[in-house]
Amino acid sequence: MWDFTDKPSRLLHVGSILASTPRSGTRGRGAAPPSPRPTLLMAITLSELGGAQSCVSQLLPGLTEEYDVVVAAAGTGPLRAQALEAGARFVTLRHMRRELGLGDLGALLELVGVIRRERPAIVHAHSAKAGILARIAAAICRTPVRVFTSHGWSFRAERGARARFYRLAERLAGRLTTVVVCPAEIELEAGIEARSCRRDRAVVIRTGVDVRPFHHRPETARPTLISVGRMKAPKDFRTLIEALALLGELDFEAVLVGEGPDQVELASLATERGVDRRVRFAGARDDVAELLEAADCFVLSSRSECLPVSILEAMASGLSVVASRVGGVPELVDDGVSGLLVPPGNPTALAAALRRVVADADLRLRFGEAGRKEVVGRYDLESYRLAHRELYRSLLHASRRVPYAAM
Image (cartoon, rainbow, N blue to C red; front, side):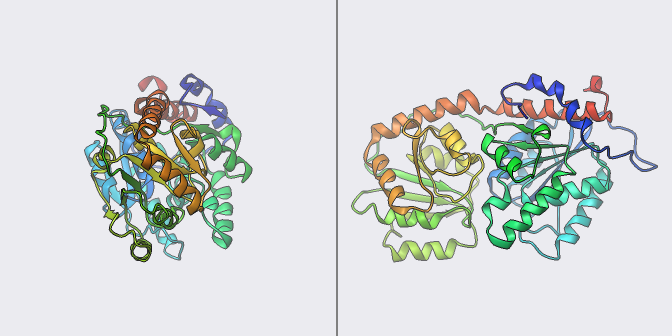
């Protein structure tokens, strides 16, 4: 395993990965000659607002000059416009759904059709459902390089039979994968333990975010808390609302950004707990960066995470952070230095941490400054894009599909 974000020169050793990967064979007769720019297909389940989609949208502008990029996803969410703006093409997947079902066969056949039409040199899959189906489709079509980024192993977020199904599916798909990319060390170790990836065919590339110029926040008598995410498990907005209700006499406003199947139930809970006048459900927004700049503290209540982009974006905006101690969150937030970490699903602990930051403007400022410094130093956007470009180049060179000198 290598951390390509820190040491991109180690990409020169990626040939050893390809040596241990079954060759896909040659393309069928009548295949088009190689394009001046290799085609790269990015497949993701949905084009909605989300952490995986943010990672893809941040990556695209660093790829389109070198690759003919095609993004394939279901829906017409923000990712579609972001892909087109970056100079990529967008293909709408009409059969792809988040939930498991018989329609997954249609989604697989649709992906096979897209790959046969586009003939990419690389298929890079993101998110659970597309991550599995796109790798199978790429193997069927003998795509030379098949990459998967885990934005949080699905078997860790699910329970019962669904968790067992995803664990088995990830193991099988892992055998078809050239390289698995993990944004965090803890995600890599979880994948190796579950046998969803192998250490010699896995890499760590830490997510990068755009760091805007910093503007000092004026002190306000009524601090604004903000949380961004899909209103469905593993995000735990219920625990957040229960914690806000425990803040009692403290004056604050909470802005909850995002949509999801639990939104109506959560709004009813806020009314039942008497915090509906202090909690605003903002829905899906395309101005999240501006909302972060106007807030005073970012809150993430969750049962399972990889390396949350929402926290990175909040820290880049100079916000203090209060978050659940799950997944890769402790790799981002230094407890007591750039924010406060609490046990998941514990409203009392979350309320105690929120009380500290709401009541202490100096503490919020110290946390915010430390968090922004961490993001600028370790999670810059250009390093994130460079690591992917060098990964692709090395894998293509090792697969002998595209002359390395041509890139």
